[in-house]
Length: 605
Image: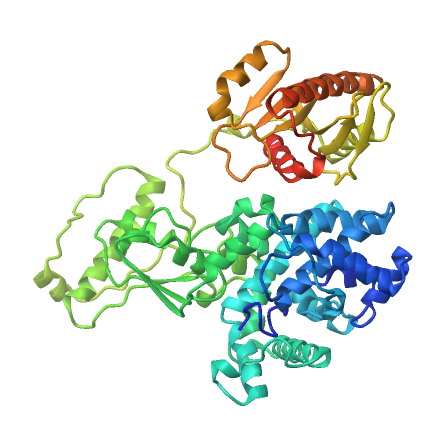
């Protein structure tokens, strides 16, 4: 349904140019031409020229590919402006489209300017009349830098779109399509080119109307639906990332989308597991949609958290050891669990239905009744044992005397509701202590970053430097133009050594394959008083040989002079190595930019 050639292939994309320019469908190209000071024909030619690098060599350009290329080209044009609009465009292009450049790109692109007018789910949910729905499904990102806000907004939209395409929410969208077409046949699904922009907008509005009706209708008056799944994603977005993909916050955005796509494929309402842990199924269960029920052996008794959207455990097999039973319940009895979140928000004392639910299914008038009874008694004993004393109570047997138990009859095992006392009281002195202030705060961090940013806004005596626009993320990129006319790209990385600020300069030499030329690289290193980095076995990279050096920053008035010495040494030595190992090359920053940024992220970590 969402394949590249279908009408739905761009349904959950975002039209960044439209949003940046404050335009609506049909007016994006005009607004872009006005901002850039270009005639309509000149804009189309410029979009076409720049779009080529984002298009593969496929014979037929699909709908999704057209929109991707048009957006990337438009953002590339806008990021060259030296104003707030250009700053926002630079952030979007670097975070979202820089990785879209094809290594094997088309030599020429068709005119894709019309793809700038494409309306999407996200452009339409931004409309003022959809404000309440947007707040529930796609809330504003938290305060922070423009880059952090954009990344959070995009990660939210990626997870929302992935769930809507692969989860329970797809049902509502599929039903709308079937109602429109009057058929369940796959071959009748709307394909690219079947309709115009008006029908595109109608598809989106129909789906948004369905979500809005679900939003204003209490859950008790309707079935669980797309709005419930998507709003739970939005409300608990941080928790979902923490338990499923904490590393996603620092991933390139394209990898975040792929990661959640791999998790949510092949979902089913009920999941089962035995023998070996199915990590994908566990991650799916930690999301608000499918599977609603997870049936498993004691395979998941330890090591996996299942608490995010689950508040009930049914024990179909009973372990004799109370600690084993507690381990099972502990999979969902955790901080930030669904039960914990619900109880924390209750204005009154919770009733039994509000609590975490633990069930022990058994057959009446059988020995299973006695087994459950004994297990509950042992669990109460276990809880008291862990709190009030460490002596094992007498008369606790691991066998059930069926005859005696039947004569004594069934007993009601009351749950422990009183406050348990610790067997190890905390002495008063252990609760006494002072409050220490943090070594730094947000204001200090902002000042340090501003100090680092000033390094790209000054003149360096004897050095000709072209700086790239900064993303204010602790990385500065630029190119030194040497007196010989050659160029040497570099990256400055902000780091620290204890309480001292440190700037690392990394200048790539290129791909020289140190694995096969290690002796020559070692000889080069011996002759130079700088640090040379050689990376063996680095696949699909733009360089594997670098020159790197660090300098400590002392008083701010000396920053420029110290960094100037650092830049001169690193650039000269890197260029010297390049002439030795790659004499025919003198590559610009564009060739190394993506890998330098990735290295900058790794160094900051």
